[in-house]
Image (cartoon, rainbow, N blue to C red; front, top):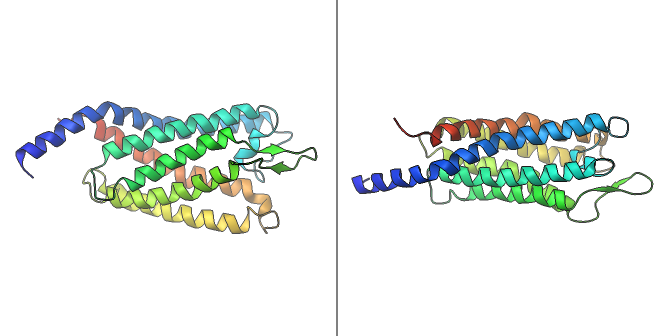
Length: 227
């Protein structure tokens, strides 16, 4: 690499630092705010909501449902910003845009989940008027595949290489969990259907969010000027 190309790379990196720093905050605030909001709604709806059996999206149906709709939208926007920052903060590769692009798609999916909420009929049965199920299919598998694809790009950047294996492992565990949940808990006649809400929360809180927080922490370090 020539001195001119190194200087150009440093100049681009310096100009990207404000966006990268904002994206790092988005990567931390998004999961934290989303979790605090839906947990608060669960407490508020304790008499008519079952967190073990029902998915987080079910909070959109019923009292205070508008708050969960906005929770999805805000989290989606923050996820999109986080994806942009990762793209700027990780060294480029030939197909490196795919990981952040998939992550950005999951942000759009979250916004759609807020725009197209779940509802309950007169008998209290949860149903999708249209659009929400598509958003879920984009978010859950998309989030895990994004981690797997992103791990390949991390492996080519010395600042991120130490996180590549963890990111890959989280993605693989996550996609296995999504597939297993789709078979064992999501269908109404599935053997573990009454645990659908718990399995969803485990995937989000134990697999996806910790990885995002670790990536956000490294993004902060990348955004700092070199001494």
